[in-house]
Length: 369
Ligand SMILES: [Zn+2]
Image (cartoon, rainbow, N blue to C red):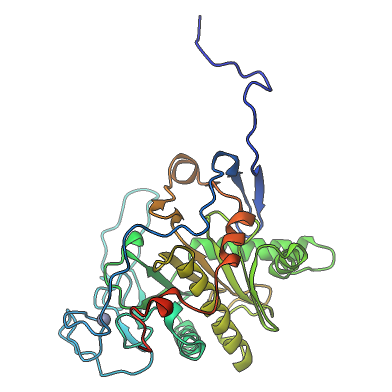
């Protein structure tokens, strides 16, 4: 049988300079293929083609703005800080049907119990986390603490997932800055995987080393991927990043849940969140889309002292107007192919201001103006 194929002899394809290797993701216990040798164009200084649109601070038909009516008919109070309410279209909730059709064979089902809430970060329709003050962000952190403590205490709740979907690219049409909370009867898969990895790491290391503490130490040793660091918090593009601009924001002290952080740690975490979100927005002078999630331990009554709470930012863009498409390796195979080097992406984020938001210089959508 004759098969036409290209020569695969070594040396027939000259390797372009750029990172090309596999990196171990210690939290997910899986390999990430880093194939950055295929994309060497620098994007520092690039901005998106479209000009920023001016978004008003109040929108009449926004269901999250103060005083407005929601689909449920309920009216939002004239809130001034963070505002939390039960999601009007919950995916898990106390009203989920209790009587279910029994599936055949090995299939299983159960009621979709839980609580789904919406967290409005502030009353201003146009003020994202990057534009909030560290004090205002600390208010959001405080609500995450209260909600995790409150919902986590419920016997039917085994996990509290606090997250934010930001931007149309991740399916959010309403720009009013808000996050969500899903308190579920199961532990979300990512966190279950991470908890097991941390438990195994601690058990297998002779000295009982903490997995995330070792990650922090490794990041500090190299230093080049760190975006923010103070006495209590650190933010970095992890060595094993799956997404181009993936960022972890973490307290330095190992605590399984966010509510274990003290006042100074909360202030520091808020400062780190401010720094990271400003850098992301400043990179291409756009409101940077991302999925952000709090990686906490389960609330099922188990002992998770070894689990290190952190916040993960997963932005879908790898270039301005170019999404990272999840395809064969990611959806088909379940492992990530990263087209970029974490060091190069961290360098881009380190090169922009973490202090002055670009809209402040444009005097557009500036809450202070
Ligand atoms: Zn609004």
